[in-house]
Length: 380
Ligand SMILES: Cc1cc2nc3c(=O)[nH]c(=O)nc-3n(C[C@H](O)[C@H](O)[C@H](O)COP(=O)(O)OP(=O)(O)OC[C@H]3O[C@@H](n4cnc5c(N)ncnc54)[C@H](O)[C@@H]3O)c2cc1C
Image (tube, rainbow, N blue to C red):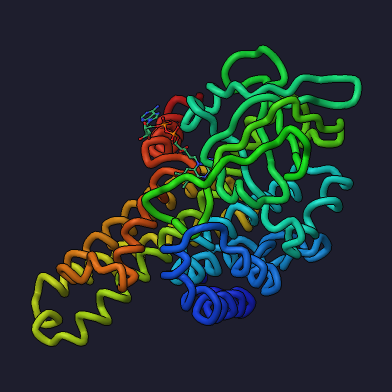
């Protein structure tokens, strides 16, 4: 059993750390204040090979694997959680097309996603009334002589303002619940697709999240990803992988808050010598170390082609909740300084909250994990 990254993985981690420190960190505070889509960060991320980390080299990706992806995401999130969410979703979209696409779809989109030519990819699943439960989805795709016409609305779509490719889920039959849902690849400039204004949100203010409306949005038959009616398993498999990314992101945010708190406490001898401060830092460091191991285990299982759904949910619920606690403790040990916009702890505390919400809330992860535990005894 090897608990350290191998040489190739460590090289990706080191490169992502350099990119995070040199490109992302100097801009992160201003990006958070000004808001908007981090174009230049993502252009440079594409140049650095960070938009297709676990995508085969033959399709323009890095071919570095899931462990390397997780390590890289943690590094970028330590510097800028906002850029990291766009980066994670785009990597996820590139992987979804690689895994579920046919040869034409792969070659049409994946290399361009990796090179940043499509800016980034977006994942359009959530709707008003269909967040935790995709079975409530109302967006429809109607078959025509020329392909499909999509009508409906998606909500809270990361990078919705700028993405060049949307993976979209829509109902293609009257089957109830999660049956009869299909997946489509919709280029961002397709007539009938319109982008809403960026939402004002608590954290990740340097990323955009928008509604996407589809009104008579016509796509050809080649837009269908995977088989008709198989959209729900596509979404669930994509989210399993996505959860490894979000656990890695949460870990990075938590580590950045602990680093800042420890650095500032170290500069204040009285504070650093207080036992409660040391215990707070100790609890955060211990919990984040456990989160790191859980996250890397889920990443490793995915990389090995083993089942990893349960492990990804365990990693996500633990890493996001412990990272939130670490940010909260960092703010506590710093007193008023923890609320200061000039220090990254305040931003970390706002940014980390959503890691317990998107790609399946903590409650949803508990349902996934609990169901799996019970299944071992019932076999159902
Ligand atoms: C910044 C941001 C970015 C996002 N990006 C994307 C994106 O790119 N693509 C995308 O498709 N979506 C995206 N989302 C949407 C996100 O995935 C959903 O918000 C999330 O799945 C929760 O859905 P909801 O908001 O509808 O909450 P609801 O599903 O209404 O849940 C509300 C509360 O009820 C709880 N709950 C719901 N069902 C149960 C249950 N059965 N048992 C116990 N508790 C339950 C939830 O845990 C939650 O606490 C994003 C959201 C945010 C905030």
